[in-house]
Amino acid sequence: GENVEQHPSTLSVQEGDSAVIKCTYSDSASNYFPWYKQELGKRPQLIIDIRSNVGEKKDQRIAVTLNKTAKHFSLHITETQPEDSAVYFCAATLSGSARQLTFGSGTQLTVLP
Amino acid sequence: ETGVTQTPRHLVMGMTNKKSLKCEQHLGHNAMYWYKQSAKKPLELMFVYSLEERVENNSVPSRFSPECPNSSHLFLHLHTLQPEDSALYLCASSQGAAVQETQYFGPGTRLLVL
Image (cartoon, rainbow over all chains, first blue to last red; front, side, top):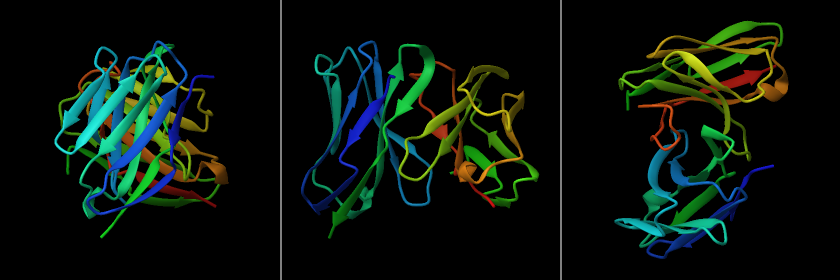
């Protein structure tokens, strides 16, 4: 079935280094790809999203890239800080439903001081 | 953060109990969602309501029964649950029901079924 694969499941980086999380999807008709951040004990919050007519989007230290041909998209965090430590979820639309997001299984990012 | 609130925050129930989860949004949104979040698994969409009408039902067992009396309130009625239903149940809302609308999540209800 249609799904979203997310890697790695855990990622540790030194403060100041970059972190990259990658997701692949199976539905070539997917056209919307949000990323959510969930800090420990808190609710998921949208941090950035990208639509299929765009290849890259940046917001300060966060960027998302999309490769529609290869059906993958990635979250890039530069100059990581301890407060970036959280679980990050990617998601993609399903062609079978205009109202549904399919989520990846999450990446636990730990930024070591 | 008070845009989307959920009560109770924690719930322990036996398999024969009946309980309800409540979600309220103060954002003037027209769409509301229930998600299930289990450890090490992706967020699973359960139900979507748009303007108080259910528009998605992802093959959720009938022991979960949603109710949306108005665009600000969403309930999830629970009865005869199983231990595998233990999870974090998240409510979300968005301006409309189009998937590209930003979804705002509540803090969740941590449910334990004994």
